Length: 369
Ligand code: PLP
Image (cartoon, rainbow, N blue to C red):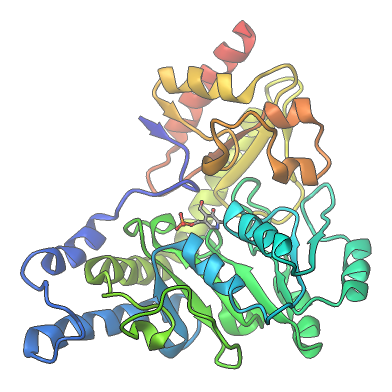
């Protein structure tokens, strides 16, 4: 299979599996147990916490392990003060936009921050935001569909100074571009293990101690009493290893992926009428989203699947839905072009040969259409 869907998920790195394996077999003890094997599990969780913290330029004490990016985003939103108003960018992942809508229905004031054709916050929206006076703002660092990188650091300081709690969803950015919790100047940051060649069902919320977190899951008091439940030790160990590897390989993989993406975009430009969304914006080095007039993106995805090529028609979670991508709609892309969209996200296994093969197949399918 040609796998061009690394923003949906990544395969488990062999070295990650190797690190996890003893904790699925021999070292199965509960990290809260006081005997030696329990302490050993605790120490492995602590090491993973250091590794994840190092990837994000933060302290181990600021990491809360969760069941993934979705839980981290929901937990971040749970820190909204009682009755507080919140604002989220129009291009957020459903794990932010859906709980935000629910908070809106529960009586919290909710504003959606508009974006321009590149998916970047508009000056007009920022002015309106000032007037709205939210207590909480969430703006994602890199978009899962377009790969567009938002200049979160540019806004976060000013928002912070106004006493606003600032959160960023860095699930797609982490491991692909440098991410510094300190430099971003946010209070809360989410990430997910399975986007960085770690296991699924594991993630983290990075938090600033000044923010009172309201735990979603209460019980035994694990994770500083902010996320109870016996730790998924093997997954956390895998996440830590994946973070360590991502940090070590960041510069090299960024350059390699960018070169591949440039090649892919140059080859896509050979197809008449094809539009690459937000092409001139700063984007993740691995992501390209494009549209083709008079083409149904889902149908094209299925035809590519028959040729053993895996791509996405938008965010993986939205696949199967008949609505155009809310991200593209927010960027002002019309419904017909938005419904034709395909997202390609490259990764460690991607090669020039795969890109050539993909272009040949795509040209054949588009000409048939
Ligand atoms: N945030 C973004 C930007 C994502 O792309 C995803 C997954 O697609 C998530 C959050 C959810 O992460 P998880 O799959 O770990 O729940």
